[in-house]
Image (cartoon, rainbow, N blue to C red; front, side, top):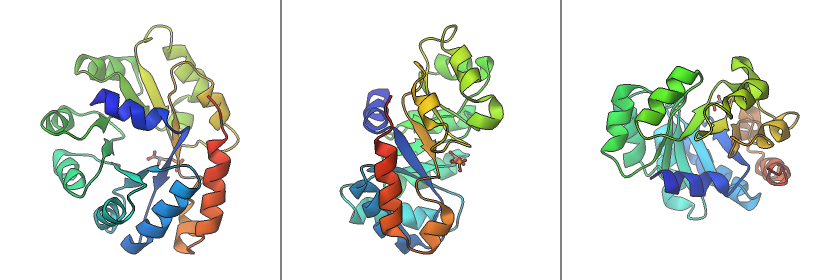
Length: 209
Ligand code: 3PG
């Protein structure tokens, strides 16, 4: 499952983190991001429409790789998996979430920040982790400092990342890709600015690692 997750994350420098208020928006949004070069997307469970948005994008947009984000507990994990999520992202790493993921074919990207959290996740078989909230927790400098002592672990940092700092994160040896909402801002989604979102995605794909 780590291999599957790595394949998704290595294929694009940025994973869009999405908050969708109207489920039907998921279809044109996923299409626009895929056209712009970012087929893998993370739809966060931060709105009542999120599960239906995942279901719609997963079934109607074959070119998209639809993941779920902001998964906090086993019930949400199972609901997101049942909706068709190809990967599942959590801001943290609880024992109950790890147990739920162990019983599922869908790969989990759990979050960890401190060395102890990271070591605990690693002990449970996770060498690919989310680092959230990246900027607030210490940013690229913090993450870089983890690369030598915790050299087996690689990260997808998210939180406060945008055009100005994405390249700095992507240059770190322990960063696979970054995540962020800047490629599909909430107000662009609300206004249906699909062409603008496609353009932001295309610009993000040119970020190199
Ligand atoms: C996440 O869940 O990954 C973050 O909320 C994304 O953070 P951003 O909105 O600052 O990009």
